Image (cartoon, rainbow, N blue to C red; front, side):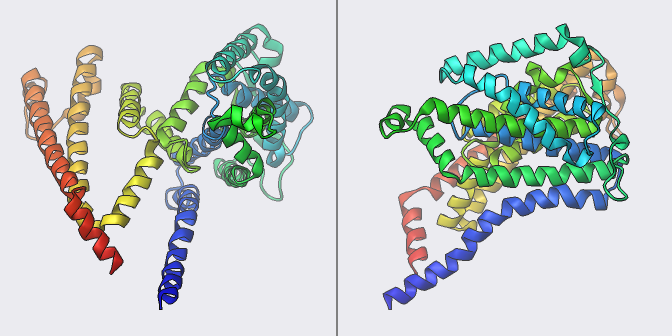
Amino acid sequence: MREAKESSALSASAPRALWRVLAPWLALLLLLAVPPFVWPQSWLLAYLAQTATMIVFALSYNLLLGETGLLSFGHAAYSGLGALAAAQVFNRIGVPLALLPLVGGIGGVLCGVPFGFISTRRAGTAFAMITLGLGELVAAAAWTLPDWFGGEAGVAIDRASGVPLGSWSFGPAREAYALIAVWCLLACAAMFALSRTPLMRLANAVRDNPVRAAAIGCYPRRIRHGVVVMSAFFAGIAGTLALINVELVSTESVGMLRSGAVLIATVIGGTAAFCGPVAGAVVLTFFSVAVASVTRAWLFYLGLFFIVVVAMSPDGLAGFAQRFMARVAAHGWRRCAAAYWWGTAAALLWTVAVVLAVQWAYAAQFGASDGAAFDVPGVPSWIIASPLYFGAMIFVLATLGALAAHYARRAQALLMSPRSSATATAGASR
C-alpha cells in the first residue's frame, strides 16, 4: 500500500518536473516567435533582435561567472572582435550570411585562446583586473588601427549582398530577424547542453573549491582556460548577431560599456539558474530601448532597479521566482496570496512615487519636455508645475506603499509561523 502511494506520488510529480524544465524554453520561443506575427512593425523586430542578441551574450558570460566563478570586465572584446572578423570575412570573401555567426564564433575563439591563456594564470580579483586590462587594450587598439577596426565609422556590411538562401536575401528586416532568432535558439540550446556536460561539472568544482579539485587530479587553470574559450565562441556569435541586425560593428562593440551591460544583465537575472541571464537580458533590453525612448532618466532607473535586485534578491530574478514557486508549493496559493498581493501593491506604489520624483527633477533640470507625461486632463498646468503638487502626491504614494509593505510583512510573518507551517505540512500529508 505504501509503495503504491509512493509510486503514484512520483508519477504525479514527474509532469511537474517536466513542465518546470520546458516552461522557460516555451516562454523564450513565444517571446521570439509570437510578437512578429501579431505586430510586424520594424521597431518591434529591431527590439526583439537586440533582445535575442543580448540573451546569447548574457548566457555566454554566465559560462564564466555562474559556472566557473570568473568575474570578467572585458567580455565585450570577444563579441566585438568576433563580429569584426565576421564583417571582414563577409566583405572580402562573401560567406553566406546564414553561416556568418559561425565565422564570428571562430573569431571569438581565436581571441579567446591567447586572452584566456593570459588571464587564467590567476583567479578571483586578479583575473578580473587582467580582463579589465585586456578589454582596455582592445578598446585602445580599435582607435589606433583604423584600417582594421574602421576608425570612428566602424566596419559596415550589406547583408543583402551576400549569397541568398533560396528566395531569402536577408535584406528585409523580417528575414534578418528570423535568422537572428534561429541562431539565438541554437546557441541557447548548445549552451544548455554544454552546462550539463562533465566539463561544466569540473568547472563548478573549480569554482567552489579549486584546491580540492586539484587534489583529485583536475587542472583548474586548464578548466578555466577551456571555459573562457567556449565563452568567447558564443560571445562571438552574439556579436555577429548584432552585426546582422545593425549592419555595422564599431569601436563601441569592444568598449567597457558593453562589458558592463552584460554583467548587469547576468546579475539581474541570476547566475545560479540557466534561464536567469535570459530574464536579465530581457529586462536590460527593455530599459535600454523601451524606457530610453520615453525618458532620458533610463540609466537612473536601471541603476536603481539593479540595486534593488541585488539588495532584495542576491540570486537575481530567477532565484526570486524559485523561492516564490517553492513557497506556493509548500503553503498553497491561498495562504501566500495575501503576502504577495500586498507586496505587489507596495512595489507598484513606491515605483510610481520614484518615477514622479525623478521625472519632476529631470523636467526641472532639462526643461518641460521631460515633464509632459504629467499632464492630467482637467488639472491646470500651474498646479502640475508646482513642487507642492508633486510633493504631496509623492508623499501620499510613499505612505500608502509603506502601509502596504507593513501588511505584506504581517502576512508573511503569519505564513512563516510554526502553526501555519504545521497546518501546511498536515495538508500536504493528507
